[in-house]
Amino acid sequence: MTTDLSRRTFLQVTTVAVGGLALGACQTFYRQTPAPLRILILGGTSFIGPHQVRAAVARGHEVTLFNRGITNPDLFPELETLIGDRDGDLGALAGREWDVVIDNPANIPRWVRLSAEALSGSVGKYVFVSSTGVYVPYLTTDIREDAPVDTIEDPETEVVDGRTFGALKALAEDEARGAFPDSHLIVRPTYIIGPGDPTDRYTYWPVRLARGGEVLAPGDPGDPMQHVDARDLGAFMIKAVEDDLSGTMNVVGPRDPLTMGSLLERTRAAVGSDATLTWVDAAFLREHGLSALTYWTEPAGDYLGMMRVNGDKAFAAGFGPRPLEQTARETLEWFNAQDAERQELRSGLEPEREAELLAAFRREG
Image (cartoon, rainbow, N blue to C red; front, side, top):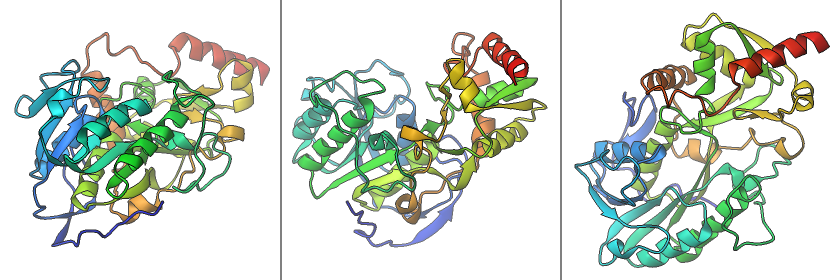
């Protein structure tokens, strides 16, 4: 599907590089005085949602949240929050109108169907946050928006796991397209990183490198890597709704190719680490029960193009990722400010396991 990048004419543009959690160093062309929009955000209080909210408020838009009131309920006391549930309790949306809705948390197509039905005639555009996971298996490189997407035998399943995630996201996209055929935007981000990441897939690296010592580096230094900082994703999505973009768009970064070697070297430098890297090849890791580490996977077979998704459309539309070094420093600062319970890393290797693998690699190598 093609993306309409010019449905609204820029009144005036300016390059901005704004600090803070909302826009960070995202260098993107924005209108100086955008027309205020009424934006409904489904979710809005977990990981990428708050960055969208802050970017929208900073741009002068009127934001309404719809969620269950469970996750971080006190995060935005100044904003209107409608309480309900994607799974059948949508009554709070009745009788209201918005210019755009941003659908963040849906992994199940039925939830998108229910939300789209409830909002039909009440919103001008439906924005759905999908994933580059729809392209599983990644059998080619330079994957563009018109590439085939994953399918499953039982499209009614609501079991979300590694096998079903991409296919369910693709089916959820179809629900948004079907309900808003001429006024939808499907955003497909790759791995989302940065402060607040509940997975710690990237967080592991600045934390581990800051600790110093010998660090197990997986695979080959030349293995390709891609990601998007949640703050840049949030800022770009608000820009996209201001510009009335439509269609389907991969959002991946950085603009210049990134390798696992440069990711670790740049992160190490950014956090001021004296750690040493020991590269352990994928075959050894597989033999020892480790097929992936954080968001690195050997670029072969079903994962050949996982980190080679084409992001030209988003870049042409003004997406501007911040430097990796900024993400590294600020992710470490965020993590170090968490309580002891949250500082139990949710991704990566436990120190004992890392030491065991390094010792085995030296013996067997």
